[in-house]
Amino acid sequence: MVALQEGVITKETKFKCVNGFYVGNTLRGCHCGGGVRDLNKGIFNSCNAYFAGTFRNFYNKFETTAEGHARWTEHMKSFGLGEYLGTDLPTGRPGRIPDTEYYDRAYGEGRWASSYIISNAIGQGEVAATPIQLANMTAAIANRGHYYTPHVIKRIAGSSRIDTRFTEPKRTTIDAKHFETVIESMTNVYEYGTARHLKIPGVTIAGKTGTVENFTLIDGIRFQLTDHSLFVAFAPVEDPKIAIAVFIEHGYYGGRYAGHIASLMIEKYLKGEITRTDMEKRMLEKTLEHEYAKPYLCQPFEINEYEW
Image (cartoon, rainbow, N blue to C red; front, side):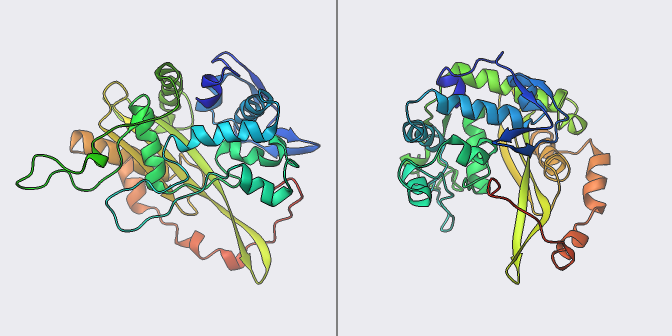
């Protein structure tokens, strides 16, 4: 949406995926199977190369990386990312949208380029977000450009209103027309893409799978563990009532555990019952206990200077 807003891509802009994309001479992987991707196919196939190409196009618009990154940071923060949302809960974390000063400290002032931070293109790298921020971001997409500060209190007995900070909309920096373009592709995630096996009868859902790389240190050695499973969604597409983010530690790819759970929760919320009993049965019977026992069985993971 940021790239559409800044005019550096259209929905027809295409990038080639060679089972990944190159940073210098290093191939960074992708699981989409390769091919030529436009915006729609890039999103519903979850193509890393598409997002990386879009990211590069955005930064190439500006005279300096710092100028482009300042604009990128502004857009990201307009979705409530990178700072406390101001909910009525006593706990939380701000997440992280790394700004220009962050990278100047890491690499030296003006001594970094978009290739240094290319992992941000797929929401990894130095980007950090909490589940409530991801659900809030998804609500902003569902609302076509605004969100309300998340809150637990719906009403107070004897009062006609709650604090206005929970009732006044916060606007993103993206024009409404660009949301429709992306929502169409998020809907196709369920129709043709990475969540096509998760469709709920009678409910139109827009979603996005996420596969989160997972590393840990054991006795000073860096190990790669099983990926985390991430899924965000909202429904119904035409009249949204629920936005959700599900994060399952060591849950493999996004459409495996997180996608199942998100879809089932959406159906239960909207219909009051579960009709995808096959999917419910699978989630009730599956366990990840074997994954949680894995760290001491893993092998060290080789990394190079291009990988985070």
